[in-house]
Length: 238
Ligand code: PXP
Image 1 (cartoon, rainbow, N blue to C red):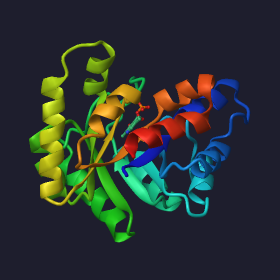
Image 2: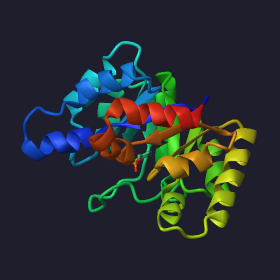
Image 3: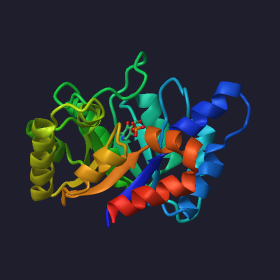
């Protein structure tokens, strides 16, 4: 059984649209945990456009819930993440103007910084993952930087599926990267833009152990309920 991580940033986006308290990401994390998700993902963005520091702190205090905190490499965010003490960290690129994380990390440009951040979290026994494009070179660099895991950016693959274009080349790249990562001792995760169809295809790749999905699950829940949508994904990942 592959693991399902639910990204609940969009619950916070909806709450923030009113500037009030509902819907509450803390309640959502508890609720989703009871429905059987394996972990909760939250992204503490530099501009705090959705998840706030207090949300992150409260969610990380939920007993027996595994929390995956996505962060950029900015010092202020890293410092806060160390205080928040999540179970897992996923380092992602961040660009103020983007609507969502647009691609994997530029590992070459930020090598030394990322290496030192990974070291900080590893010293605290926090599993650290790097969000990377499906590139063999980036998988090898991730290993050299000391990461425990790589999360392969599936945005391009998901978009090809949604626009009914040919996916063979991108699927091949994801498969090759997953194989190489596992071979050199990195756990493989996948995320971004995934829906039922793209998850079903990628779930056939043995090496991928964890899927982190947000926007589609939260959007689909409007029509079918969060419990039902989580159940559907768990069925796909069985
Ligand atoms: N994984 C990572 C590292 C991400 O940055 C995101 C988007 O915040 C996701 C997974 C989830 O993407 P989506 O909301 O498109 O499912």
